[in-house]
Image: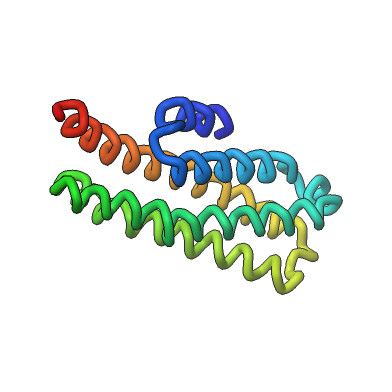
Length: 156
């Protein structure tokens, strides 16, 4: 997961400060996730790490929905990018579904409901898979919108 994050930063880094900051936050999210470990035993010793992961998680998904996606959609509208807007309409529902799972996990942790580390570990592993999928969807969206907006700018 970390490698794909670095690849995204290399491809789109510098294109837009908002996206740069967001991709850096993604990198921090992945590092925080990896630091939690894969076993219930590792997770049991990581209460503070789990809380930090949840903070970064909420910041990341919020920035996506309330900043980055809005910016990308606005750019697509400004460029008359119907292909990008259609892609966004296709991808956003899945991204939104993953966001709901992430926020539900955060809410559970906020309530201190992580005494059963086996259950939390399984949820965390599932969330990791969903986040990986989300990153791929987001990268696809950025790729299509960025590429289609670069062509008109290069022609000017």
